[in-house]
Image 1 (cartoon, rainbow, N blue to C red):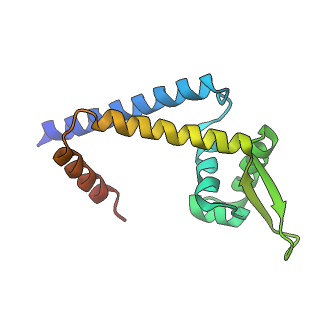
Image 2 (cartoon, rainbow, N blue to C red; image 1 turned 30 degrees about the vertical axis):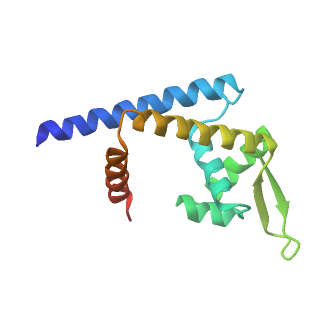
Length: 141
């Protein structure tokens, strides 16, 4: 059994390395090499949530509002995000992706699709279905 666990560990490490290489290459080619992994998580959260307020991002990522505030301000300064003041409550700001942020998010999604294709390209339809079922089981709450 231990040998199988080592195969899983090696595979996870290989996939992680491949993902890092694909992201680094794509981001550098498109001029997005200034993004950190942590900032990438925040951009993904904003894209996933639509136009969240600071507290929505904090809740989604399980971090404090001051943490969110600092990183969001930096991403605004870098041109990836913008904020819009609520018309109902002037204390609330909604965050959204700028054109640059949308381009980054699209590229990041494309890298994920490339990785998924690489993982499944040598599998037959039955194996892909089995893999999907196993991954769903692993990632279930």
